Length: 261
Image (tube, rainbow, N blue to C red; front, side, top):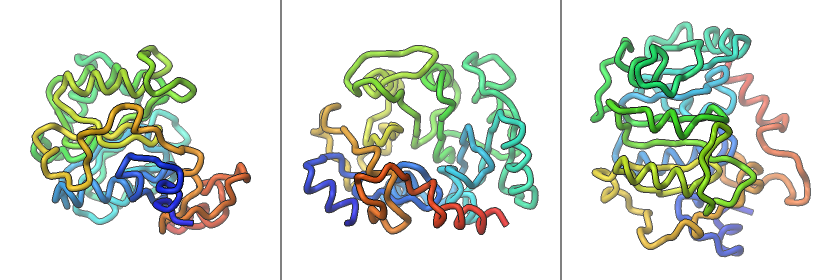
C-alpha cells in the first residue's frame, strides 16, 4: 500500500505526508523535503544539520549535498559517529563538519549563528535553504537563540510522548504547539509534521502549491509508526502489526552501506 492510500483511508489531512519517502531518512523526510523544495523552486544553496550521525544514516540532508548543488554544514557531537562522518565526507569540498555540541547561547562559539558566520561557505538568508535541528533535547532553545540567520525551511524535532496540542518546552524537548508559537514569532508557518515539524519562512509560503492554510494543529496529526515503515518509493513495506521499522531492515542497511562506500 502506498502512503497516500493509507492517509486517505484513515483521514489524515496533512498534505505533505503524501510525499513521504525513506531513502536514508526515518519518517519520510526524504520525500517531504524534496517536494517542499521543488515547490519553492530551490535547487541549490546551503544546508545545515545536527546531529548528522555519519552523514548518511538517518541524515535528512544527504540527498541534497550528495548532488553537489548544496553546500552542507554537518554537526555531530558523538566522537565515534563523527569519525565516520569525517570518513564519508573527507573528499567532498561542499561539506564542512564539526564535532561539537550546538549551544543555545547565541554568543557561544558553537552557536548556530557563530558556526555559520565562520563557515567556509558564503551563507546569507537568501541562500540558507534548510536547517535540521535534531539534538533530542534543547532543540527549541537552539532555534530560539538564532538571531542572525533565518533559513528558508526549518525542520525541528518535536518531543515524543506528549500531545501535539500541549504547550510544553523544557530541556527534554518541545511540543508541536510550542514550536509553532516560536515559529510564528519568527515569521514562519507550519506546513508539515511527522514527529519533526516543518516550518517555511513566511516570505516563501505563497510559493507552496500543496500547502493548506486552513489546517489547525490537530489536522497535522501524523501516523509516525507507519511513516517509519515506508520505503524509497513511498510504499508501506512492512505489515502494520510488525514492529520492525524500514530503517532497521537489511534493505535499508544495504543502501547505507552502498552510499558510504
